[in-house]
Length: 420
Image (cartoon, rainbow, N blue to C red; front, side):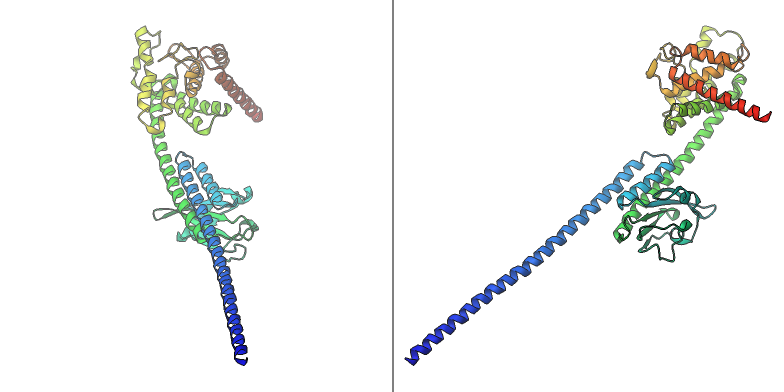
């Protein structure tokens, strides 16, 4: 009996041990599942962070690419510097930034474009090379990443301005080994922090911006060179034809005023200025005896005179930056009703710049001495323009020019009365 009793106890003990083992294994399996699940969740969370970072990086790189594509067509330094600041702020998700350009004459940085700064700060800020963070970046050519611009001793705040954000990046605009400016970006939120990755991305943007700015400078210098050359030729025409002395300069002045009155874009106004300056450049190929003939021209001589727009077009067209100007020169003798030359274009077929030059040219011809008559009064010229509106001239251009003349007259009257 005792043996059977012991046997039962042993079996119960074994059963209990097996049950404990099974429960322990289940517990361990559950723990492993919890650990693996936690690790899996952590891994998934980390992967999501990597994906988010990658998405942000792709967005930033696309933003830099978009900047490059947009900057390609810009020829104005003011437009480009503002585009750089806007692009940098968009990349860094902020609305606080500035671009400062370095004057190598004064060794000072001034703000060329900004977001989030008051006009007073923009106009009064002057930072010497080596002073404050921007000055040090311009001096050393190395980017500076600041955690807290309020407490950093290197940072000199303009006019004691309080910046709501603390994190700050300043990167140089470098062309080869020369620093031309500095790009500064503030974090949007008070506790937001930039990362080293942000510094590298802004450096890429700044390098691209610096090269584009340098190209604009070179392009501008080349433009000035060509313009000075063409101005010299235009004045040579004026000198050749004493009756058109200073005609080109007057035409250029009126072209700008009419363009402004018509609310045209600045780049278009500039092209029309050039066209007004150079519209008679083709007369360099016309015989002086015909230009100075005091009497009536023969039909053959008139046909020769009519060639001067085409000659001017051939002179201007090969110069790349003057390509928009060439058609204005070619068609400045066209009439609004289609009865002009060289091709008999009418209305909107005639480039707007050519229509503007046509009005200015006619007015100046009437009010200047000619080989066959003396200058006529301005009032006569105004009446002729009104009479020719919708026939020889674009009526919109005539109206704009008459407003310019009226304002010019009022300004002269005001000056005369102040002298008295």
